[in-house]
Amino acid sequence: MAEKSMSWNEASSELDAIVASFDDGEVSVDNLISKLERASTIIEDLEARLSATRATVEELVPKMSRESDGE
Image (cartoon, rainbow, N blue to C red; front, top):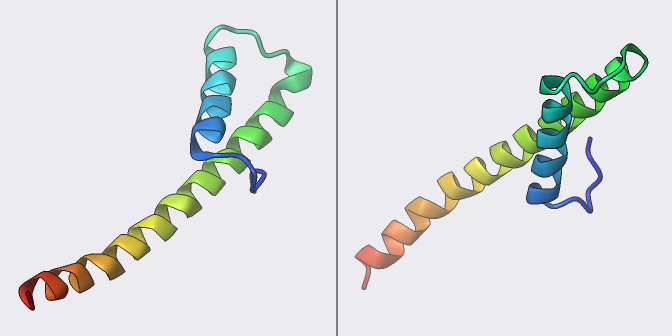
């Protein structure tokens, strides 16, 4: 998992930089595996954050709807 202290934007920027280095042909064979592993770790972390956010939104929206109906 990516470092917990990384913000979404920091993790996303790091992932973008890794992808750009692949696109630019800047990754040596020696660094290929470590870059792919890091990208995979960041993607897993961002997907987990999205899932958690989705679950929270799905929980809160009905509550907000009920509260606004009661006013």
